[in-house]
Length: 341
Ligand code: UD1
Image 1 (cartoon, rainbow, N blue to C red):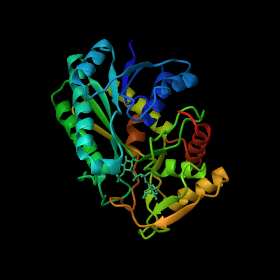
Image 2 (cartoon, rainbow, N blue to C red; image 1 turned 90 degrees about the vertical axis):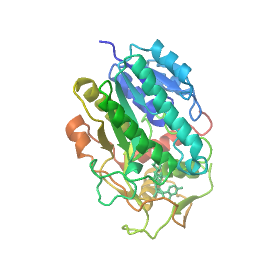
Image 3 (cartoon, rainbow, N blue to C red; image 1 turned 135 degrees about the horizontal axis):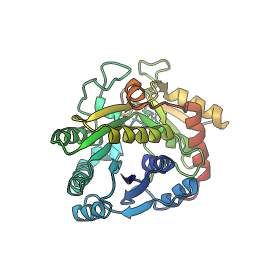
Image 4 (tube, helix red, strand yellow; image 1 turned 30 degrees about the horizontal axis):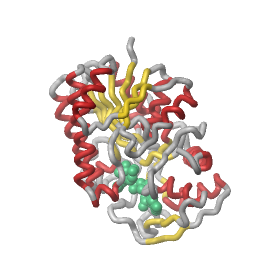
């Protein structure tokens, strides 16, 4: 059986780790990326890990013609994993049009190209941000979604709604995976997160401060109703997350009569405060971290963690890596990649 999978955003953080795990399972992967927030060298790094060079297509999914052409060339693909999207929360507030244009055009062009080429399986990269300020913790998939606090988050919520409608037309099967907080890196140290410019997220901010690229970490708020006052998140190792995509794909391909968009939370079910992450980093790395407590960040919720039972029951997915592993691998990656891409 042909096992070709198209991975959009395949040179990015989660896309590249997923490409490795797909190859490990015997899938042929085509990585599509416009390299707007990723590096082509990722292809070589995937090759260093797996010994297999993925096919690479430099395509801007905002360009419908290019997208159609590329999907036609790879019309023997049996599925698509759609990661390609802009994801900086702050930037999405100052330039919402850029986010709506990129994330919606990308999704729509991918769906049209899939339909024209009879490719009928898609996995969509979503986020826990669609739960807004959740009324109940841990979060189960049937908790109603809310209007997210950022245009970025809204592109994920509306992206899911678009998929819901298309699945009902009968030609498409789709799964949406709602990520909690992906961190870590491949244990080889060859691939990891490479944010362009100053990072927005906690883990790259911590590791870049520890290597001296940044002066000081700011901890956003210590007056939340949590055990130490700092906000709680459900951090998940990117390799565990990547493996969940492979499980979801297997499930999608074997589930012939899907009639609704299937949704899964991807988290560990355990929440850690920002201070716990900092203390774990200091212990695991042996480095003291320069940080100060500042005001809360606009739009942050106090606590977010998953109930991941559905993914483990239905997909047979297991979380294997703990916070120490996540931090160890993020730290190794940062140290390996101080000066290059
Ligand atoms: C955010 C987005 C989420 C997106 C994810 C990845 C929201 C509500 N969430 O998650 O949709 O998928 O990024 O891009 O918009 N923190 C600090 N100092 C820092 C950075 C972060 O204290 O310099 C704290 C934050 O206040 C938060 C925690 O660390 O409590 C995690 O922050 P971050 O890594 O940015 O992820 P989220 O905001 O949870």
